[in-house]
Amino acid sequence: MGRGVDCSRCGASTPLPDDLRQPTFRCGACGAELSTAAFAGASAVSADALVGHVRAAVAGRADPAATPRFDGGGSGGPGAFDPAGQIAGNQALARLRAEGVRCGGCGGLNPVPDDGSVQVVCRFCGAAVLLADHVDPAAVGRDRLKHGIFAFRDEVIRQQEARDRLVRNVILAAVGVIVLAIVAAALLR
Picture (cartoon, rainbow, N blue to C red):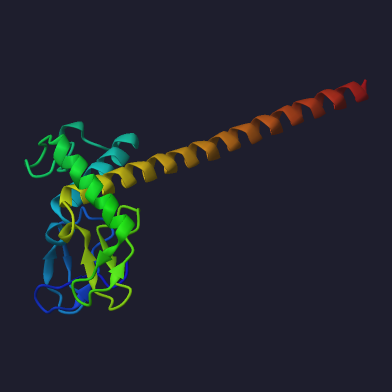
């Protein structure tokens, strides 16, 4: 993800963990323990937790009693349903993607990818730009959840297609062997 976030202890840039379910991560420079949610936002962290639970559930390894709650409701708190606020947050994130985000350090305008990222790295100075500093953090979390679920869906589809190809090839090979056996038996008579 590039340089990462600025450590609150030493100021050095350090990357966020790829899996935001890690409650803390260490600064690469000074070793300080930093809170993932403090940088990524509680909504993004809960999105990763829910996607991880769905993956585990599909694999048969999830505890149904321990299903995480997604904190993507917005200003009403965890689980609050505020449709107008959610729509406004989603529209603000869409505008940020369309217009780009300014770096707080150098003022450079940076593109915002539509990939579930919680931050971008300034292409001018390399500083981390947290999207939750510019739009509702719940909108960033909902977007991360959407991308995580769609990525999982695509992975499951690819796996199913690979299994289907394998089954088809095994069936074709078995039919070929049976046809060869019938032809060989007919020729030996």
